[in-house]
Amino acid sequence: MSFKLTDKVTWVGKIDWELRTFHGDEYSTHKGSSYNSYLIRDEKTVLIDTVWGPFAEEFVANLKKEIDLNEIDYIICQHGEVDHSGALPLLMKEIPDTPIYCTSNGVKILKGHYHQDWNFVEVKTGDTLDIGESTLTFVEARMLHWPDSMMTYMSGDNILFSNDAFGQHYASDLMYNDLVDQCELYQEAIKYYANILTPFSALVTNKIKEVLSLNLPLNMIATSHGIIWRDNPAQIVEKYLEWADAYQENQVTIVYDTMWNCTKRMAEAIAEGIKSVSPDTTVKLYNAAETDKNDIITQLFKSKAFLFGSSTVNKGIMNATGGLLEMIRGLGFKKKKAAAFGSYGWSGESVAIIEEKLKDAKLEVVQEGIKVLWNPDEEAIEKCIEFGKNFAMKL
Ligand code: FEO
Image 1 (cartoon, rainbow, N blue to C red):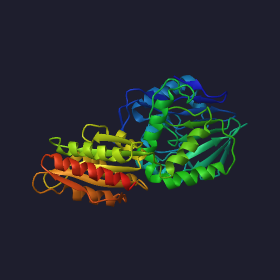
Image 2: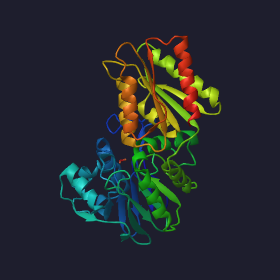
Image 3: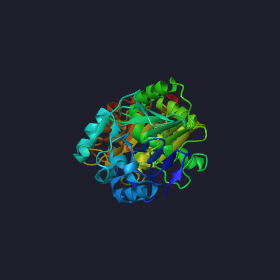
């Protein structure tokens, strides 16, 4: 499959309908993904990015149907992660001398992955490549989300090839934002931001301001995953500015793990207490062990506050809760409030451990956690409801 974005630009990537996990098992991809590669034919011919290694043979074979590989003058590698560079080794066997344009960090990363001394040309922000009627301008996007990440702006067609930024893990044959289901699109876009870009939010804001200050006309944002933004492409830029600014909705999320439903009963009673004080607040409950971790992270990203609960097991917390708390520590959510709860039978360490982990994640723990011995009785349920009320009043 290939299709033309414009007279000069052709998509030559791969839609991966089967993909269900990404970054190993770190990111769930319920709707598959795509690896978008673009071929620009002006006076010079340019290939921007490739695809993941398992699709290398298919990619090179399809590219040969599109063009004589020897006609490719330049390859631009915007990001060395293997989902975009994975077909380079096979492609470079065919055209070994073709220059590969990337950042200095890109050279290190590509050498680190493939151990090849290809014909690298290092570029930095503001460097340009004249390819005929159009000019390509490079914009480094360091740590968005790897040290080598960069974007490329094509004049004339006014396309920003944004690599991972503004992307989504979303397989669709429709490929454009105005053609796909908007709920699916934005669900995947916010999940992508929440799970991958949250730690770099300050950089996102600065980079967007830097690009906007150039006042470049923008007809399309051609991402490296998912659909291409051609209908009002600024909409996703505006969303990113919102998401990068300690984003929150009027939502409280309660995450728990439970052995015999005692902690679950506490979670439901706490939710009842929150709702009684703040009926307009969306309160969502998730059993950490039963729910996709990245979907929970997306809900936490949208929340102004959250609570974590776990039974005590072996003087510790249950593993699904522990895994999520570690993800939260790494993501570095800003300006969110939190508290802990949990049931126990004898030693009862879980609440103190969760509180410690919430503080370690730089969250504001607004009240002391609540512990219940064994199965909560009526009095304990009342205390949990009160706990929820107090929590809601602190938001
Ligand atoms: Fe889609 Fe960071 O690779």
